[in-house]
Amino acid sequence: MVCGPACVIRGFLNLIVQTIHSDVKTEETDVTTEHFRRTFGSLLWLTYRRGFPPLGGCTLTSDSGWGCVLRTGQMLLAKGLLLHLLPPGERTDPVCWTWSAAHPQRVVSWFADQPSAPFGIHQLVDLGKSSGKKAGDWYGPSIVAVNASPDPPSLTVYVAQDCTIYVDDVRRLCERPPPQGWKSVVILVPVRLGGQGLNSAYVTCKLLTLECCIGIIGGKPKHSLYFIGFQDDNLLYLDPHYCQPTVDVGNTNFSLESFHCKYPRKMSVSRMDPSCTIGFYAKSQKDFEALCTEVTEVSLVPEVGLVPEVGLVPEVSPVPPLPPPGQEQVYFSVQLIENVGVM
Image (cartoon, rainbow, N blue to C red):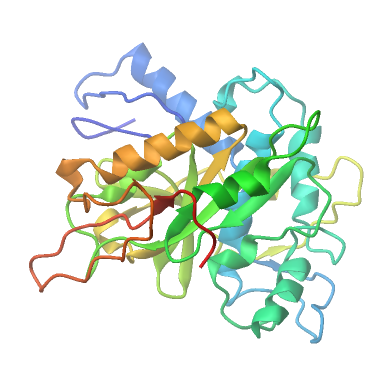
């Protein structure tokens, strides 16, 4: 493996920071490469599909050319679901997972291209109708917040409003009377990072280092990608823009081969459009409290040029105005608001 002076592969993949020198090939670099290969290969890759039953209200049997936001949203949600299904005490590093193929197959079946699949494209398109969307239209990332399904148990989805996480609202959503306990939560936060494109602060990479982060939906206008980590100044991503035949998940032991990608793609962080959606997952109340702490700490790191007033505040703080050209500051406009309701 040929690398630069330092190769950093971080993010929700939970890889340890490694320093790899290009002029020295060691057993350690081989182990690191294999660890990354196995970790990346464990992620669910959900792409355009063709040949599925017609979508409601039309004759479309493929989402090629218009469904990339739906697919990247599915991938982010699938990552949260895999973490949610981990047995108590299981490490979050996918390389250490000991479960059988039945677990990934179960998750994939929830995203099947069938009307009955709770997180499938048919369900997402039907959900979009309430927002005036129809099959073939462009969808926003918040469409992923499907909550009408009883599967999986003890999990809910929260979509932040106005770039704001209302802490008390999340608590009310997740708290349940004994003996049920706290409900796990996937949190989606649509944000705008910076002014006219991201600068050298690379706040995106900072976010991907958080253990609670399950990835970022972003890319370029009308070209959605699923960012899962970074290497040096490049973001690593899974690309949904590859049309494959629909898989019949009703068949016993259906193949998962087309749901995993062998090779990561990368894009310079400077090319990423600043409008994106960040995903977080908290399995327990303790995890949610840690999430609040981690997000606040990232929001206050001075070297990434973040606006200092973002954090735990008693009222909504306005998103800072865009600075004059050439004086852009990257800001992370997620705010954690306590004791207030949804606006």
